Image 1: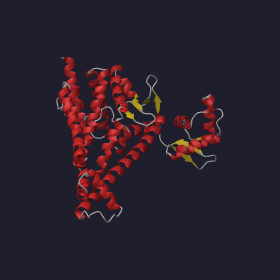
Image 2: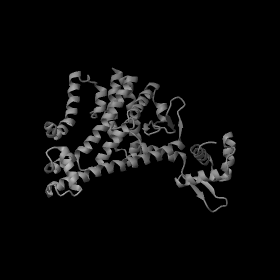
Image 3: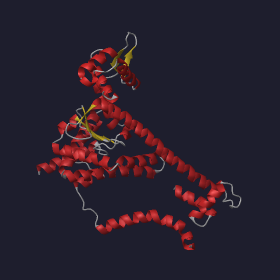
Image 4: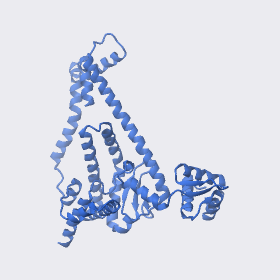
Length: 270
Length: 123
């Protein structure tokens, strides 16, 4: 969106992107030899610049806010949790509810488990949970989420920003599930998910009203709608090599084609 | 010499376990009794730690007595619950922690999943 406004705004200033950018720069510097691009184009240019700044600023603000929240959380963790005796970079908090999450950080990321998780899950299921969390940390999923959160925050009225954030959230869970499946089998992972999810739901319903617990009892064969669970329950064969190559290729082309076309007139001149 | 962070933790543990507010002197003595590395601890260091904790809202100071006495602002359990709310709650700070294990699974789905797994087991 920003790109299209930028390109359209620059169009009268040159035949290709590079000379147009050069023309834009001269225009800003007040060079009289540059033709006046007209109000509409100037408006598009200004809007593109504003949106660009807005995006970058929102990203910085979100990063700053999240890092502060993490620092606070980490500080409390330090006072309230104990390092796990058996696992590196793992903290245990003293609570009966089975909980697992991770706190990413630049210098040190930690996985947090509750005592409830350690008592209610078998050793194998614990391994599934830990492999899942560890892969979130190893693959720096927090940065992905940060980028998409900031994008959504900057343009909350744009439906694609919400869709993208949701999709990325689901995809990172699937990625982490795949990592966990390298360590344990499907059934163990599913059992671990069920135990943790059920306990969280019970806690939820007991602290609020009992409407959701009625739903729990009432729909034993409801649909499992989330893609994450569907693909664990009925695994599908991964895409073949040609299909994967095709997807990858189209992704790259989607990025490269517009850029090349914008510069093309100049390339042809050489 | 223990780091400031470790010291904060020891001080909080003492305050949480103590039935009544403690003075910095009490704390210094208790810390010295706890471990050998805390022996050299000065009361001023304890006061520094207490001031930091007070600023963070973890400790409350009783100003009516001399010397001032300190108590934990809320119990260890309350703080643990607060911490978990941070991680699981609906609060906005959920971004602080990354994707908890059951991210994106609703209670209803958990129930259906459980039913499916049970049927697999019995079959």
